Image (tube, rainbow, N blue to C red; front, side, top):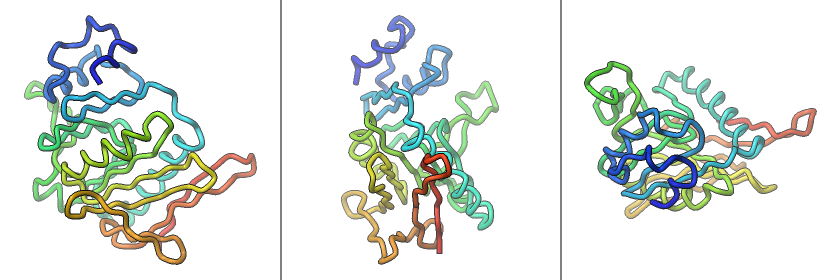
Length: 225
């Protein structure tokens, strides 16, 4: 959203071509780019969330999910797991964003379906994930609900992402969905009687559960069969 930029950064430091994908990429890799907040580029629009993350319905979900997902992936040796500030770019979908969780299988990396690249030919530092990752996950917050459930859901589908994990832990009853590609968009995988949802990428049913620790703070575990 073009007017949103003025609210959080000196407009004079924003390049004039920020509403093109390459222009946004250049800005994102520059010193003028904000150090905090969640900013996504989707087909010429910039989606902005500068609010601090809620600790136990957002930040803890991310960190606990990453630990359990990463541990399972390391045991199964399936691919590479990335979290938070990994910069994902897809030219076809007109998308540049930093998902809460991103996974690339070794087979997708070897086939060239996804690649890790530098911001320019002048450096060897790999700072972008390009192509179609196997799995992307987002944790919904009050400010990101529309972006996560509508805007990015469509963008990830158009980018060829195989599985989209969508988590909403704001209410008493947590929602955990695994969305897979249908004919015209993502469709939710039906949970079994125990609440497990099958992940084709992981090759097993999984379930995200919330528990309260001794201080009555929420913790999360990714269970699997």
